[in-house]
Length: 238
Image 1: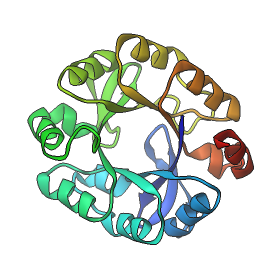
Image 2: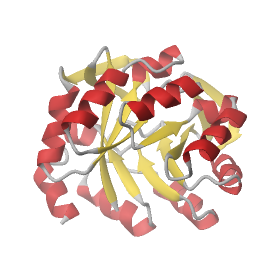
Image 3: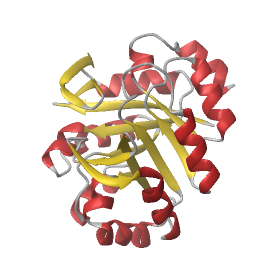
Image 4: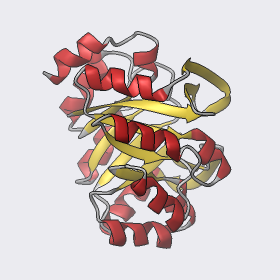
């Protein structure tokens, strides 16, 4: 199972939100590149980079941060937040993203999202399935649809999606454990590569996610708040 630390960007800084609420913003580091290098130095190979400015603005903004990280580290970066057009997708890949994540776009413009899937291939595109009380949320989690998360994932699996990041917004930043039952349901009903996100608070949560069958786990606040040490992650990876 892949361990994927998260770096969320607002105004070029490394921040975290609680339940996606921008008013809860807490800055953890002024320089995202330094955080990325620290992860790399501790054996991490993957990074989840989110352009929160972009998610709110509806177009990619922090692509220079992405480019700096991909040029100056060997991390394989999946990038999301504000990718809403062919131009945004092009910029993200040209800035070094290994994969891009589409969440809101998959709800609001499925034709464009499927066009990216056909253009770049299934290995390059991740479906961002962010939900609150099982309902898909969009636009940086500021809006909520009536789409059930499992139905949403299953429909996109039929259309060729293989990789899914599933975030339970009610868990995000709360350090209260992963959405074990939701992940079990998704993996029982589909064959997607499921990347768990939200609520990771301990190594035990990683063990649970691995046992369930998750392909990867995104870790954010647990690292920044010292709930999981880099040494523990090294041991888990080993």
